[in-house]
Structures are given as structure tokens and as C-alpha cells.
Length: 97
Image (cartoon, rainbow, N blue to C red; front, top):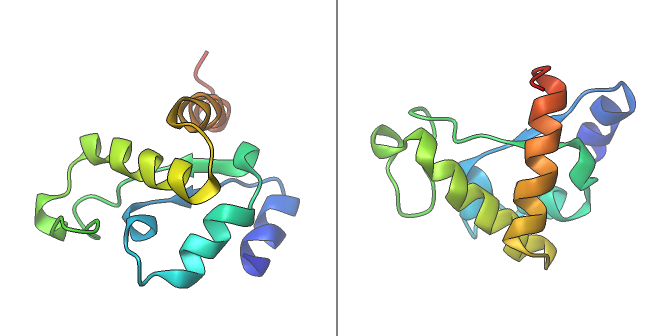
């Protein structure tokens, strides 16, 4: 989280992927709970990194919904809030209107 905060202060966004779905990924899960939601974009890392219960080779872009759900659960907020904010963040990062 401390390293990510330096990137955020530099105006960058932090990508969170399948690692946050794994209970043993304590550092990234902790970071997911404390970093500002306005600075987070979601990804799947497909096909390089799997999710909890999904092997890397089986990871596909649609698994980003699982990442969003994990983030919502970790933060104690609704899936809708995570989806809304991370979509806005991605639109800003990729200049999608």
C-alpha cells in the first residue's frame, strides 16, 4: 500500500487483478482496502495470473467481475459502487467518453 500511494501521488492509477481473490495474498488484499477507490482500476492479468479457484490458463476477461466482487467484499461496499467508480476510473485513464 505504501508503494502504491507514491504512484497515486504521482497521478497514476493502481491496477488490481486476480490476486485480491486469493485469501493468502495478504499484502495486496490489505492494499485493496486502504487505497482510494478513485485510484483503482480492475484487471484480470489474463492469462498470466489466475484467480482463487481459476488457473492462469483459464483466466479470461470476464473474470474481472470476480475481481470487482472481491474488492467490494474486502472494502465492505456494494458491487455497484465498485463497478461505478472503477468504470469511471478506467474511462479517465483510457480517455473513453
